[in-house]
Length: 400
Image 1 (cartoon, helix red, strand yellow):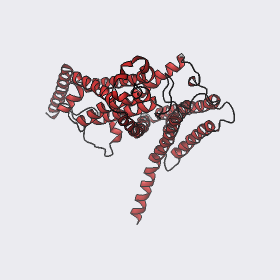
Image 2: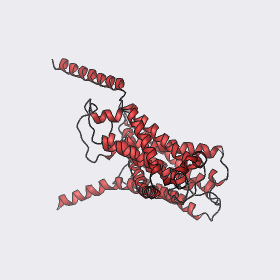
Image 3: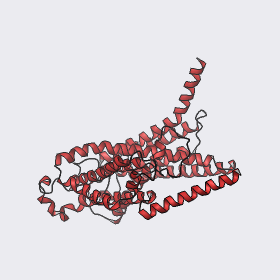
Image 4: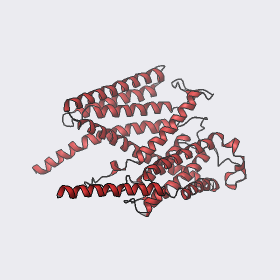
């Protein structure tokens, strides 16, 4: 009798779930599809900000009639990027305020998040247009705030990346049988370390053409030192975190170091990249497109990873009508991402001239990425050492 009752209960849940999803598809309010629509709107905002920066002065001549633009000076270029970013930020922050705390898919706020697309598109367009009639002082104030908001986005992204690496390591260690698991871990770790070493050697070859490139030598060498430090701490007997996580973190910091050096302004003897030339070639265009897509994908993947920011882990089982991801957190990440793409397009400095088809170029961009690399290592090391410190403290307290 119990088996029959359990089967009926499971069948009823499946019918309820199927009915819920059918109703959502019929009403155009599917939360899974909604994520991609929001990401597409974010991508369009990115491309619009780039178009205003690079081609706005030739195409948007009507801007000269707006009183707040002062002959289009304050509505195009870096100012134009900030105005598009402000409109995008207002839209996603409004969505954050209206959806935060949503827990059930049958609620009104869940329907608002996953549906009402005609109204939200109109709202998005209106929010993009409104900043172009605001005075330049408001836009400059937003630019100052955007520096902080972009830093928050980088911190959220950092925690998300480390959480993913830890999750991947746990998945490998929980694999059965144990012998096969160890082989997979060793293969992945070896591959990660080989790629790290190849990347570091390649950076020495490309970006240290002469001994006077002391800054690049420091960046690359310090990255190698940090890789060794993470490996040593991870393999320490008291930590015993394995060799896979430091290898994957090594890939992450080597990539950030490469991006930092690539962000150095062209024209110097120590930077050999497409940005140092005075013409726009296919490599520059492809690099720009990849950078924009990577920014959108990073924002999207970070937005759906709200569980890694839950400080209190709840063992309660998810119910059929629970939301599949945190709607409020999702929109908050996109709101800070709007500030982040503005900083990338203006090189973190409104007074720094940016060449066409380039992104995240300038000394400010370089140091932001380098500091982000060092912060990533500090956070990772703290995640390794903190449990040991906490365990030792509990032992001391217990002994007393």
